[in-house]
Image 1 (cartoon, rainbow, N blue to C red):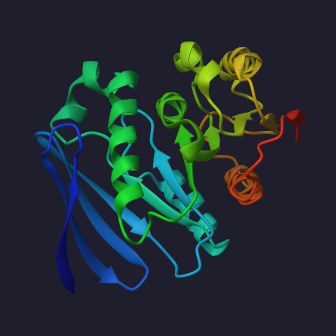
Image 2 (cartoon, rainbow, N blue to C red; image 1 turned 30 degrees about the vertical axis):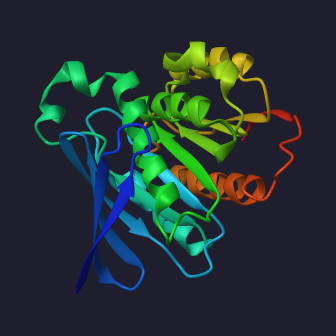
Length: 248
């Protein structure tokens, strides 16, 4: 096992963020990212010829160990995409409901982690995208509204983009909203957000799927459509307007 330290400068404060990289095997790296007074842990899966990096933003009460997000991440890895799954909160913070549902705080964390990945030698040249689940989709959309064209695509799985309504007008990235057919309330909330997204967008309702996509074959569909969206738009530099509402 190799261990080495990367220092990233902060131009505004002059302070240095430290990122410790522990290599367990050739394709997987555990990252510890220092942000102010906390350290966030994540796992980077990276291949030599990756065509982009997908950063996962998990929902409240979840973590980088989410079996559903890991299933999707592994599928994306097989399609030539790098992935980064990390904990948005420390263990102590995750015990506080006020913090767990603070979408603004989570979005700020996501922005800072993304900026760190932009500076890393192994990821700085990769196009970036977000995959958000549940409330994590709102955090991803807010972060994308801040980072603008640096984020090339977004996928929301059973997400709550309605929690980011005031920020949607500033989202530049092509956005795919995936919702289960039986998740009626969340469908309505996604339709509301869909109308406010200004650019390239698609809303897909997955047949016979509930909020967690636990039904046979439904999570596979999520992974399939996510991979297609990322591969298509990570290479689409013009981001020409496109609207798509599909029941699948």
